[in-house]
Length: 247
Image 1 (cartoon, helix red, strand yellow):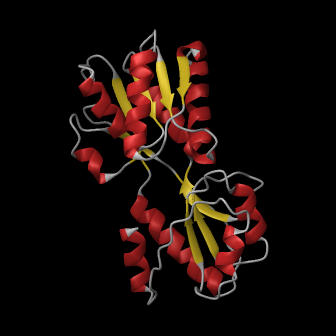
Image 2 (cartoon, rainbow, N blue to C red; image 1 turned 60 degrees about the vertical axis):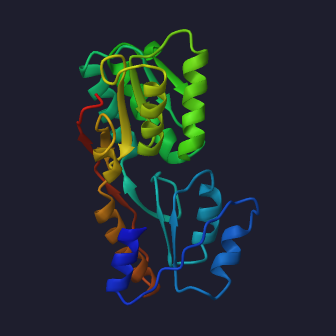
């Protein structure tokens, strides 16, 4: 959000922030028809891809931070989540992990693609049965509770964790410490996002970097072009593996 605000200010625009819990199927229609804004940047698709496509078909100045799929209507900016999932799994496999748990809610398209990349990397390594999926919330406290409950109930503890976001990964590090488990000695942990906070966890968090600064600039550039009436293509950036101490 800070990077978006900076990029918009450079273009002479103000950022109006609105948090949306989409319980109303017309939530996005109400926003675009309100007359309050020149355009919209939506952060995350969650399970709202159908709504985004429907509104994008009639409202041009709309750009979304998230995943891309070949048949989508809305314009998006984000990383190749499938490839990022492959990178994370290949790294964990290369460090000796045989049982990897994926933590995230695959109803969200970004997380689903990350899981699919992880799954196919495990399959290519001849170990698809070594992958499990554990639903986890995106918010830190809820993710910590999910992870703690998993550690209390699981019969076969994994030796690798691929968290669908850095926030989930940080919550996992906290829970593992509370259960007396050492990272990376007992389990190796990899996140996804490249948040600067990952430099300050103990141990420092290995992650898949999305280059959010470039992403923010792409979002603003595409939005400005769409405000001017241009129909733009989506941007898919290449993620990078950042190896730190947690793996």
